[in-house]
Length: 570
Ligand code: FES
Image (cartoon, rainbow, N blue to C red):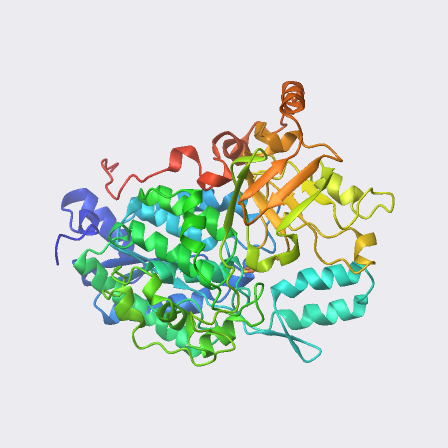
């Protein structure tokens, strides 16, 4: 043991305080030797029946506990607010920062020496990692694992198909009855979305950065190996406390670069950008939006997974999992980065094997030379915007079209299917006021549905631009995260119907082709619309959330406060 246990500042105390700390633990039927002198391991649980992706976390927690006990630690499970993508309105992202505060304060204020983060549905991973980084005690992530692949009419389906089914229903290519049959076949087991959406991208992110044990990302939720991994993680965190391995020892600048490269190789979610920036801000690693382009530009797509490819997380696991992907691209990674296991990345993946070339390609024979995230700059996005080329249409990568502007999501919903809407396949759909402040939480509405009259013509993709986000399961030629957002008076707020917009993905630019004089005139006339939220969490959010290119964290949460509690209250 390198240093004394933090938990002993509670349980090792003499007098009244020690009496209180120990006596009330004993009401759970626990003998004092359980928590005196043993590493106390918090199991931070996002279990909730309102977060279906995490609804099996009580079982996972039991496996973690077994591991903690067998390694000589003492497990204590505690709840934090859970965030399920499917039920929370208006968007789970509104609460990512709130949960990170819950996690940070729960860890700091309690007698915990190390923590296991049980993460699953999209925001639960970044929220828990952000909170833990701001405390910086030994931490390991255990993900819940993906669902089994969905089935519909004999075909494999996953969440990405939902967008296609929805367009098919709108264009009447699919009946209500068929839509319901697909709904019944989509979610066949416990676990999070089965495609390389945000949840899977986050699970890969923690594994690529070394914050979880190897193979964490792809083992299906219902595979017995998921419980084995949880038990091994419980055992390992006890050892990590003894070795005093903290997130700041793992999350180096090189670990962040590895995460960006791996996210590119697997065709990971665009939401990865905003979450990784926020995590970097908490652990104090300088990272900016341009790094995502810089480190992913030369990385080809070597995992054939929806929405960029064909297969599902279950297939990735059977094909060798993330370790096999990382081994294929090891020459491009910082192999010496340390992981929670005590091994380096290079050592962690040395026995991995890619056993299905349909799912994991060799680096020299990739599925697509395009991958990752391209960062665009220009007069429409002075601080940046992003596009995921592997999920977009190659013929639209260089495109100039007339803007069809929707001032907000309500305006879009009202007019998108209006037969009189002046739009054709060359138009550029623009959705304003869905950024961090304009639509608090920055919802995943950026991959706007195509107008019904164009769907009827067989159009399946067109250029769409917004200051919002897109579901990690989404696809299309969709420019996202425009910063500064329209609600903060960026040039994006100044676009009018009929303006020409030029998207040049190879050239990394996005510009409004309107003269400087006219832009200045519009800017002078622009007015901030008065918000009507003056109390509560949403008010706090609007006043403190940063722009997308900085990670949309709260300005006062950057960095950490460490693990020391300076005052006792008893
Ligand atoms: Fe939870 Fe997709 S809804 S991961």
